[in-house]
Image (cartoon, rainbow, N blue to C red; front, side, top):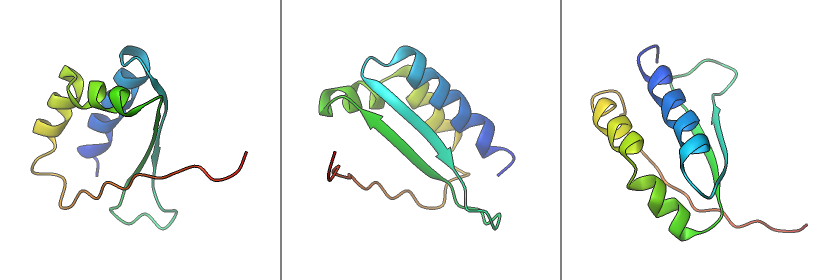
Length: 82
């Protein structure tokens, strides 16, 4: 976790700064300290997500984390209500 967190923090900061359409990028961990990280990201559109996924900082993150990430689950969420 100590190696992973700095890498995802750079990716999050870069996305918020450089990726047009990135509204929010939160890095969340359970309170119990298990080795699980949830990334909550909000983008303007599907195109904005693709821009992020094709960015140099995301490519660096993915490559640097290959040996650190056991499983990646991507779940698209839809906002309900106001």
